[in-house]
Structures are given as C-alpha cells and as structure tokens.
Length: 487
Image (cartoon, rainbow, N blue to C red; front, side):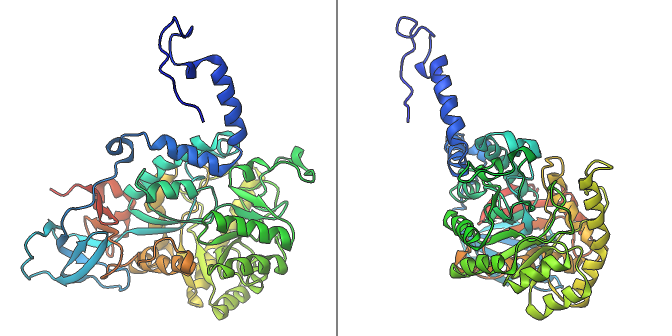
C-alpha cells in the first residue's frame, strides 16, 4: 500500500530518516495491522511477504535441485510396505521422484552422482498424521494474543526443524497453516509437505470454542472470536452453519476437514465425557466434504462421540482413547480409520497443572490408551499415528522420540510401517484434494524422493529415531538434500 521514499535528510525529514519511520506513520501502520491481523489469510500472507526478503541460503536453507540423477548405493532398504529389509539394491533418483530400485552390483550409467550409504538403512521420510504446525511451537497465550504474522514466522522455523527431524510429511489437524504450506511448496522456506485441515469446526461450548466466559453470550452478527479470527477454530451451530464453515475451509485449500465431536483436554469449558454435534450436523459436514472428493475426521474420545460421528458418515476418528469394544467393532465393520497417539503419563505427556480440571481430564484419557490400542489390534483397525503436540515449543523436539514410545504396543516393524506407508494411505483419502498426487511413505518407482538414511537399523532399534540429529545422516525431500553428514 505504501512505498518507502528516499527521504533521508534532516532538511526534508525532521526525523533524519525515511518518512516510513515517523511516529505518525507508525501509528497508522499499527492501526492497519490491528485491523487486518484479524484475518488469518492476510496475516499469513504478510508473513510470506516478509519471508520473501530473507536470503534464501540463510533462513530458508532451500538446497538446489540436483543437476544430475542420484544413486544411493550400499544400503539396506526399508520400503514402507514390507517388514523385511531389502539388501543388494540401490535406488535411483531423478528430479523429485524415485526412478527405480535396481540391483546394486550393476555399473552406474555415466553422469549419475553416487552417494555411498555405507551399509546404513535407507527408508521413506516419516509422516506425522496429527500435527499442529501453527499451534505446537507457540504457547496458548501467544496463539490467543499474538499477531498471526508472528505466529506464522515462528511456525516457519519449526517447520524447518520438523523436516530435520526426518518428518517429510504431516497432516495438519487445526490451525491457519495454508500460508505456511504455500511458502514451503513455493520454496520460500523449508519444511514438510502439509495436508491442511484449516480451522477445526466446533459447536458452541465445544473443543474448538476457546472464547472466554465474558464473550458469552455472543451477539448476533457480532465480531469473530480470537480463535476464529486467526483461523484456529470456527464455531458453527446447526446444519447451515456447519455447511458454510466446511465450505470456507475447502475454499482456502483444506485437504480434509476436522470437526470436534467431543470434549477435550486442552479446552477449558467442555468436560471430556460430553458428546458434541448431532448426527445431522456431522452429515452436513460429510456431504460438503464428499462433494469435494475428500473426508471428515473428528476429535473424539468416548463411545458416544465416536459412534454418532460414524453414523453421520465420518471416516476417521482421531484420538479414541476411551473407546469400548462395541465401538471398536463398529469401526472395524465400517472400515473407519483409527488415528491415535501414544498418550501415557510419561516424560512426553505435556502435563497440565496438578489439581486443575485439564489435568483430571488428561489423566482420564491416559488411563484409556492401553485399552484403545488393545482393541485396535484385536479388531485389526486401520491405525495411523501422530503426536498432537499443542502449545509447547519445548516438546516439539521430541517428535521422533514420541514415535518410539509406540513400542509399548507394537513391534518395531509395525511402528515403521505405521509412520510411513500406513500414514500415507490415510493421507491419500483426500483424493482429488490431495495436494501432492504422487506416492509418499514408500520407496518405489514413481514415489516422491522423500528419503532418510539412518545410521543403524531402526527395524532392530527403533530408538535410533529418537535422536535424529545424531542418527539421520541424510535427509532428502522432493529430491533435494536438506542434510548430508556422510563422510
């Protein structure tokens, strides 16, 4: 809107510098910022605009695409599909795709760059099926008070770190991540592939209603709440309102839709046992999503919340820690995805203050995790894995370590398959809304060249993934090498 003038003299500028730095201009700019920061789209766009001026090799660290094909040789291959390592083969990468898996003892064609894996394990990039790009790296108070541009910039740095932890793809399940995704895809900054949900849609008093009590009752045609303004969650009551909010997220670029179907831990005004939304409201969201060729997932813990959502056509349940056997049978019969997390009272628990209502809800949820995974295994539910880290920037560094805690219920090969090819199958349910049409999570011809080289065998020792800085020697996404510490 404004251009910086060349005024730099005290004779023409009493402030001795550009007029843009005058107090009057600063006040005007602050007013405009306060007005426009209410809109997540414009806030995120501003962050992208600022990031565009960063030196590409400094903050963004986007490597150049290889000029020639790359062969990664002398490796054992975990392909994301089988529980056995492939030996005696190498992979050939051309552009951003895996071109072939070929015998490792044949001569390489001229002009191919060879990377010697030194007998290490080559595997697909990891996938987190329940990540919050915008909410994980900032405290809740920042999300509720800070400018969206600032939140986006913090999230951009966290996205870079996410990729360097070996997570080349994530399903974002609430938050204004559209601008961040665009910045990553266009090469402004580095980070994983993002399947965005946009704002989580919630009923009044639901898990996505983060208003303060003084904001209730809401005035008819009143302004958006802070959570709605930043695109974290949208409040919608009734079929018509749900249809509108779902369609808005699809317009913004959602690859799948998320609704809150029951009480939550992080939210302060909904007990964990309550069910949220009616079957008709779920059906409205599902109809809108299916018209766009995609699906609805829900935040739900309890049998009633899960079953109501399934009757409404929902195809994925996120969490589910309090499910019972009847619910597990229904999920198996209906071929519903169970996307859950290793929520137990351990060092990665992100505990709420002792004595608080949130802590009591958290402990109730923890107590159901063993049963839920037991039922998932008994009924062979299609099971995905994610972290669901929220509002705790100290915890994000443990993303890989949290994956390894799945060994409480699953074997190492089952964990690896879940966090690669299994999660990829869930992401593929977005159908035509899938922003990345080629395969992920597997090592095969035609798949994206999203590749990790692990110093050791994670099939034998899954805890190698808990220390990515030490044990991930090579990280490649889209055929570009983001890390290479091989000798």
